[in-house]
Length: 152
Image (cartoon, rainbow, N blue to C red; front, side, top):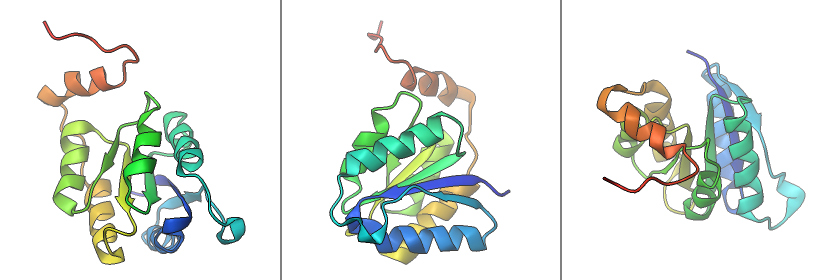
C-alpha cells in the first residue's frame, strides 16, 4: 500500500535522506522531503524534527522518517509532540516491533550509526507492519496524553 511519508534530517544525514526518499518513490510511496537542502550548511536537528512532527501529527503524512548523525537528537525533538511516537532503531526487528506494539508513526535512524542497506531494511519492516492493537492499544493511547498519569 502506498503511504505518504515525510522525511527530515540534519546536515549529517543528507545523503541517507536523499537515498531513502528515492527508494521510497521507486516503491510507489508519496514522499515529502522536509529538508534541509544540501546548501543549508550546518543546521539544528530540533528545527527539522519539529517540522517533521507537525507534518505527521497534523495528518500531512502517514509516517515520518527522522534522521541525524546518531538519530538520538532528532528522535527526542519529534517525541516532544504528543501526536508522535518516534522510535529510534538500528535494526529491522526493533522497527517491526515499534509498529506492532507501539504504533510508532515516525522512524528515527542514525546516519553515522547504520548503513543505507540497514536503513532500508528498517524502513521496509516499519512500513509493512501493522499495529497489533489488542493489549497494546490502551498503552499506546496513554502515550498521546499530554499529562502523565501515575500508576495505581
